[in-house]
Image (cartoon, rainbow, N blue to C red; front, side):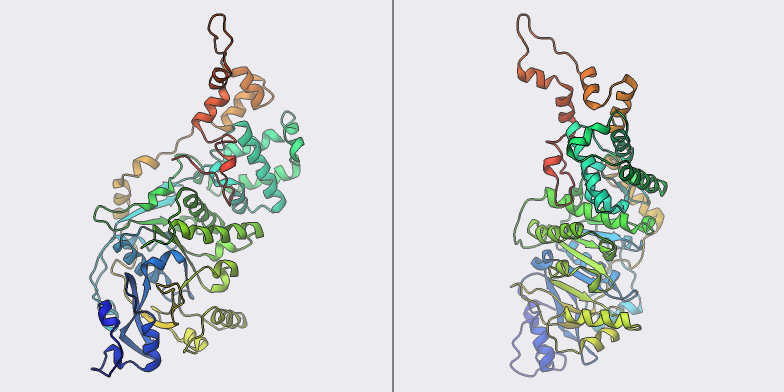
Amino acid sequence: MSDSETMRPATAAEAPGSAPALPGAALEIASGYAFTGPALELGALLWDGTCLPDAQIRIPLPMLNRHGLVAGATGTGKTKTLQLVAEQLSAHGVPVFLADVKGDLSGISAPGQPNDKVRGRAAEVHQEWTPAGFPAQFYALGGLGHGVPVRATVTSFGPVLLSKVLGLNQTQEQSLGLIFHYADTKGLELIDLKDLRAVVAFLTSDEGRAELKGIGGLSTATAGVILRSLTAFEAQGMAGFFGEPEFDTGEFLRTAEDGRGTVSVLELPAVQDKPQLFSTFLMWLLADLFHDLPEVGDADKPRLVFFFDEAHLLFDDASKAFLDSITRTVRLIRSKGVGVFFVTQTPKDVPSDVLAQLGNRVQHALRAFTPDDQKAMKATVKTFPNSAYDLEELLTGLGTGEAVVTVLSEKGAPTPVAATRLRAPESLMGPVDAGALDGAVRASPLYGRYAQAVDRESAYEKLGAAKATGAKGPEEMKEQTRPKAAPKAGQEPSVVEQVVGSGMFKSLARSVGTQIGREITRSLFGTARRRR
């Protein structure tokens, strides 16, 4: 249905099914979604148990960077909602990032299969359904899965996020931050976990114990906890997430040759039993994007929309400092043109300070079988604007593929709450064949860039070399190995020549492993900006 049809004035009754023939309350709701600019089509209004296909429920494209929430009980259709929105964003030239927790979103790259159920849904909501696949790139954390490996260095991940992954308490997190500070100032590159372990072991050795005394020190007990946590982490097969080549999150901003936005699908089933890892890693991706993207303000469309599935895992057992950092990142990244949608079971899974920033809401059915369920239901209803519906009754009666929707209008005001029968995705609703997926990954231009891990000289090797030469630490090792620049005859070397010829300068030039290259660029999460 065209915009002009949606926006006709309701001056007189027309033929049955036309917009002006809608009931008064339904017409008032529908008018709140009659946008003039480009918008994503979600579905048709539900009123008094009837689907009204002439009343289309939509989201204005420029408002997708105002963030959102997709919530609902298991099996209510959240994943299909993600797919529906991602398809239309791609069609509008907007890149999309999808966290594929269950392993069934690879189908977005292939045309959907028509069947009676799809045809029936399309007819109900007046959708011109055409099977279509969308340009996609597939990734896997550390190569655990079919996709192009996504890795981060320990340095760029930073102490705050790493503490979350390792399950450290606040005191241990502060000590880890001190360790990172030391490595930064001494030019000890923390590339992978063995680098971090080497630095911790050195700082608790007879040679290194004095290194941190002036700035707080590192207790043997705390160092032991950190080392044991690292060992357990590696024993679970997680070491591969940290290393090089480090992934450039700018790859997520790609568009296809035909102008459609690329859908980046991060495969996560292999780490489903490591919820802290994948949720924290997703936060690193978002924080890294925040670093690199320039301010754009309010644009005609988002630069990227990021879907954060199983969002409750990010917030479970999170420290106040960590939650504050998430809140600031979500608030500030909007001006970089990035929209973030959290996907979880109930709004109460998301802290109130974060929830307040989510302007677009798609709430699928909730269950109210227990007192806790009923409490969650009441809390969910309170998060919606005043409504013409009895939301407590409605939210327990919605069918699969139906949801309660409220979004931000083109003027930034909340739209009326609308019960909606959602459209069907046009791509395959399920995973593609594993062989086809592997073929697509290996054919990707990114495969050659990121597939093979690299292990260059870093803290582990430098500290090992220092021990082998009898040096008492990185500073003494530098003195022993620093090349002596030959001055010109009868002339002392200049200060510039001395600096340029030093090992410290060469280390600075080849890595962001120095105080200037790393520490002063640490972000809200303590992550380090990388030089592109």
